Amino acid sequence: MRRVGFMIFVLIAAVPAPAQLDRGSLTGLVTDSTGAAVPAAKVTVRNVATNARYTTETTAVGQYTMPNLPVGIYEVQVESPGFKKFVRAGVDLRAAEVVRVDAMLEVGALTETIEVTAQTARVQTDSPQVGTSLSNTAIVDLPLSFSGARSPEAFAYRLTPGVTGSSWTSHINGSTTASKEVLLDGASVSTYRAGHFGESSVSLEAVQEFKIQTSGMSAEFGRMQAGIFNFVMKSGQNQIHGSAYGALRNEALNANSWVNNFRGVKRAQDRKQNWAASFGGPVYLPKIYDGRDRSFFYVTYERYRERTGGFAAPNRTLPLPEFYEGDFSRLLGPAIAATDALGRQVLRG
Image: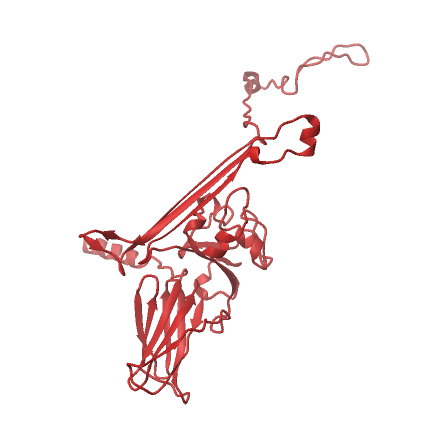
């Protein structure tokens, strides 16, 4: 039993643990007003939406790195004895990005604070990767619809340089079909047939960010030769948030074509309905549990219906009984009696 238990433990320990591919990192250098490094300075990073805090210290050369942070808006605080507190607000961290936030401390008491509110530059100097990030606001507000419904993955083929094709025949920078990988919160959801999201795609109301990485990816993205479609789902926050979406199409609202009017044909059936809603916030049970700053939830629902008159009911053909006996005389219609040049009758079949 001991040997079996040890083998089970080894197998469990050998299961690969994927990196946090749906997260980002913060890095920076802490110096004083003369440019000298400030070692052992306390760096605190706070997620504005969830109030989650992450803490580290600078190295002997004044550098710090905060890896694997959930995407979102952050506030960076730097403290060191003999210096004023440094606060940088509005740091926008996106998936697979390394955002640099340097801090220059001024001599003074910790009770004094230096607040910096300038936006962080989107040009990355700490990572060679090339990609495009689309926020949920940009995706939802764009009046784009593909194949009748809203497809999260399809936005990449219209909005990203170097990405062409469709979900079934996608090409990134001239790569072969199905050579990309689709990630959902860091987990691969690529289908084995075409390497795309497919019918399992999530509602756009649930997508917080869509990152298309086309080149220069780090080793953690080494499974595919082309690029990465990285989806990050929304998460609950301390504040209650929700959204709703609706789109309706009906032939009663459409104009008939000139050809149909000329032929006296009425408008064809063309009905499409797309409804979606989302809701999230902290887990809260009155007098039992208050999940603010600790526990959150987020749910989404989307429905799409389509009824058109462009396609008839599918036809299915079954073989006739004589086909099983090798008689295919009725395959192309009834036999036609004929004679050859000498007047002899040609046998049927």
